[in-house]
Amino acid sequence: MFEAVYYIVQSIDGDYANLVKETEPDGEPKLVARALLPAEIEEGSRLKYEMMSYTTE
Image (cartoon, rainbow, N blue to C red; front, top):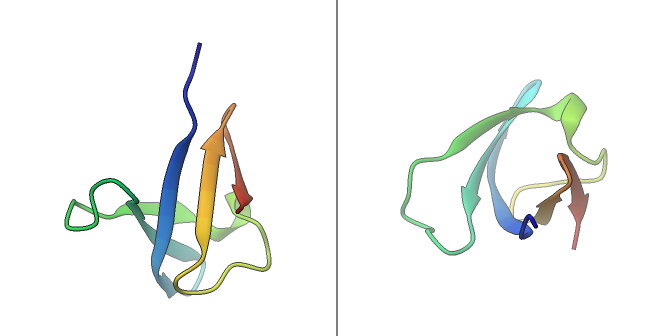
């Protein structure tokens, strides 16, 4: 069905985080509300996006 997508937290700016796909580090960042992300993230964290939710790896 759906494959997991891995992201790296590029930066955190207040209530939002910029994520880049692990397979495209120079690609366009994706802006995601921090409320949708695990509370313990920090810049450089690796996230797994699967089944419409993010988890730390």
